[in-house]
Image (tube, rainbow, N blue to C red):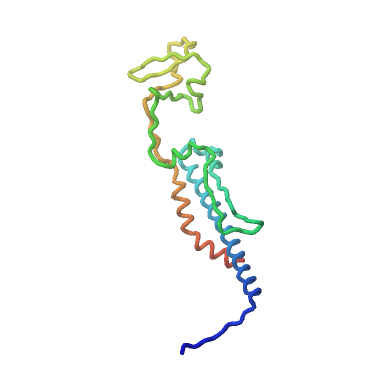
Length: 187
């Protein structure tokens, strides 16, 4: 005959102890999630700043942000929290995901001055000409013989990947368990 035994517990105290540990677990999970996202965003901003002169502007770096969702439920920390890392500028994905080819219809008109307006918004009457096989647009009111083109026409451009934010996020997510144990012990 197998041995039999009974365990008597104070069920309300036992449930309260488990609930306390669940809360401690949820607090540590949310803190770890926020710290992981913040670390990934901080390193991602450094990566964006190192991508080239145009990306050293504060708006490109500060555009990488994170937001947490479902971090609390009924005023208590939740284990279903999520962190979303995103860039304010939708075009940022073009620089993250590799070679992107953008085709003109039939041409892309690229301003010759950095930050110049698009050809359709220049407010100038433009005249096009082909110089040594390269299409260009000039200000029609500028009659100077040595005038400079305002726009250069190309059929397409290829934008290589410049950011590696996804790789950085994965690296920080891999450290989640270690960071969680630190937060769980501290509580």
